[in-house]
Image (tube, rainbow over all chains, first blue to last red; front, side, top):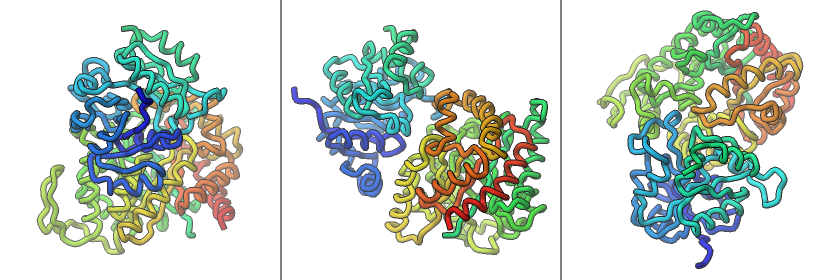
Length: 215
Length: 342
């Protein structure tokens, strides 16, 4: 299997442009889309994500190997699962009731597991959700840098997890593979690594000591 | 470029000298005195941000601003911010148009979400509707600010049909800003509606917001609008020396961020992170007048901004510490920044 290279980032709010920018810098071909006309984000793309292509969401997803969901979770219901079928989907969203309000559909269980159930034709990996959008860019470092930080990767498909671990590594983080998509609950708001941006050893210790990481 | 300098408060609850919290009522009266003192110290703008909590008992800042207006002559007065999504744009417009009348044309409005969300459950709004509420209400607010009868319909309030909304503004439209925390689509929206841009920079290197200023200018151009100013709003504290300012501010900052961290997804502050944020590449403007002036000047320059608002105070600081902060900001920091930028 060829290495998945082409990225579509869905969402041009706080998080999407940061992930897109890091991916462009790491050499990935990147498209970015919102729920609307790509013309609406043409200026944002030109000035803030040079090198990325603004596109319609369906077209961006259809041409991508990896689709990154960087939209508010309460808008997830608007996503058409069709164009995501057969794709590797990175769920960078969070269920964060204290900040964004409660959502009945996400009250029970890990949010990425619920996302994966709705995107049954896709391979879902939870990643890039637990580092704040400003810090995601500020803390990115090349492999081997002494102050490099860790990023958790959670998924049930080992090849998909390996691909996203490679993406995390190339955009500037030491990937830490967790025990399946369910193990990704440790990355959620309220968990030990959410918002903390820890170095590898501390990240692994925090995850190990947390009950959520045990299936 | 003409620079203006403001002070913003969230009505941060004061302690007395023995560390005992003052009442909400006394804190509010202290804010009035702080606003008056800001004018005496030479500050251009005094803003009050809407909050509804025990630590920030300031839900009706416009009432306090009207009291300050009655005791001042020159200083401009406004919200910082008004949580428009959980309010009625017509009422917000009426309150600030009234403040404008009371103050002889000195009112401004900064619209936004602010760093808190408690007004949503309080007034029966769903946070999940935030985007739609803000988009629609900001568009209506733009209609109201334009003046004249308003015809409008939408999902978030009753329609208006050729409605004359009073009081009429006597001296040009209210200056309106939109507070933006890091969403580039919010920058585009401000430009589309013809509102000025207020960059709320509360953590990390301010320089990374330079792209937002550039985006704003390009978007104004694309929408065929004339240039509009960019403001920077950042927290800080000024005292006689760097050491004193940090010693006063640090425990208050640590306690409040630790309290709101779970809700906001902030990391718990450490002395290391505080040093980073108060250093040249951080967002906290804490230190002696010279330190803070250098930082403000550098940030205005790199961000192409013409206005700086220092969000002063933190829950637990004393009224006396805040009055000293205001005195130093108006008397020393502002003149020094003007000098550095001239």
